[in-house]
Amino acid sequence: MDYRRIYLSWMLTYALVALAPVPANALAALPQPQDERPLRSNEPLEAVVSDLEGYIQERMAEDGIPGLSIALVRDFQVVWTAGFGVKNKVAGGSVTPGTAFEVASISKVVTAYAALRLVDQGRLSLNAPIVSSLDQPWLPPSEFGDQITLRHLASHSSGLTDQLIPVNKRVTFRPGSRFLYSGGGAMYMQEAVEQASELRLCKAGTELVFEPLGMESSSFVNDASILPRMANGHLSYAIPLLAFLTPFGMFFLVLALLSLPARRILAGIWRPDARAMLGIAIVTWLVTLLVIAITVWKALPNIAVLNAVVGTVFIVVLLILASLGHRFIAGKPATKPGTTLAIVANITWVLICAFGLVSIASAIHGPVPRVPSPKPSAVGSLRATAPDLATFLIELASPQHLSSELAAEIRRPQIRINDDFSWGLGPGIQHSAQGDALWQMGITFGSRSVMIIYPDQGLGVVVLANSDRAFPAAYDIAERALRGKAQYKNF
Image (cartoon, rainbow, N blue to C red; front, side):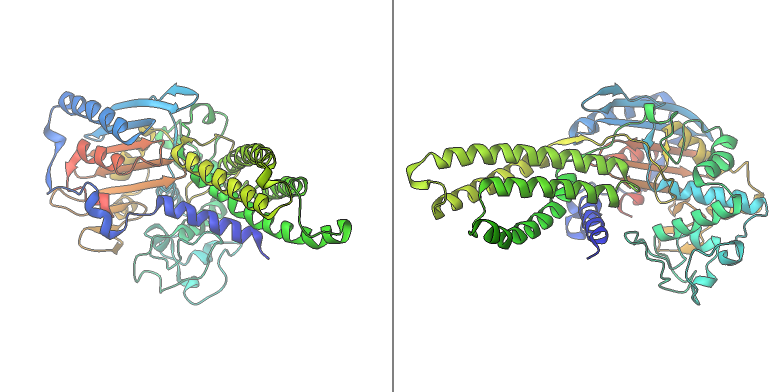
């Protein structure tokens, strides 16, 4: 049995439950984009900043967001940056403009820009099949796979899917024929960047993007310069707990069933006692920790640590409560040890305690550990500050490090989605009466981010937050900063 696939698939399912877009029938409960209004580009900056400062603190308090950072762009200049709240609800530490956040899918846009730099240098082609640029093929040979170009990858029109656990390398439609948001396409683009530059993505990002643009607080990994300034993500501890309990429960059931014939042979009885169940629980705990280490640590070390810690606390507390309950039940005449009533009472007590502990975990909105990240990923491993991303937004809107031809391609719709949206070479494009806006959002375990800029006006904003509760607040703050249509809130 492929326990790695089972565990990771289950964990992804829980992540999707926590992170997925709100169902259509629940959208009425969320703030909806108002009628399109003029952009705030002509309002006095002091008035806009004063309005945002009050509104941000109000929304953070309402939604229970520990920390948030914002950067405002006007006339292609970063004119205001600020930090609010704390980096970690437990350890504290004030959020400042220099605080780095996990910005998730914004990584895809940065990787696309790095690829365009390589196109300018003649080391990649925008329109030739990617496979022709690679020494080592990444996709298995197929008719559609051999047609994928960098243009398709950067505009999410390659036909590759967003299925990452396990990675699905099947091309589901003819490249360029329609839009499908694709983490698999980002992975393929990373492969192209790394092979063309002969550098890992973390180094390629530094040389092609961060150093030329002066983004001194950005990295695809938690290196020594970034980690001390990172904000911890925050999420409901029910997610890592249930991710731990799923393999734990499966292994416990298997070991408990296997122990019955063994106990029959060795002790002459079928019924396990409390000591045997304790031993099974300890062995199951160790096996579950091993499974987490094997399956999760490499890709998500912070989540692996959180799963292990939360799960271990749960098991220890549950065992203590089970022991206390067993002693209490054993002391009653009607539930002497070994009787059917005693067994039922003990099982009922354990189930009540387990349900109570899961309920407590659901109520805790706590920090995600910060640990070194061993592997850079175009899908979502970027760490950055709001001012750095504002600088990157300015470059997207008016590129200074790309040829004029490629600069125009970034904001030109490559694939049409609907009346409101297209996708460019990297960022999404929202169409409105106020002009096109380039945008991208990011969702990861415990963090939310959004960046938007109107390239014709040079007006943009970056909002970063360290909480899984930060949508729709981050979008509302972005809308408050810019005005306009803000249809991106329901993309």
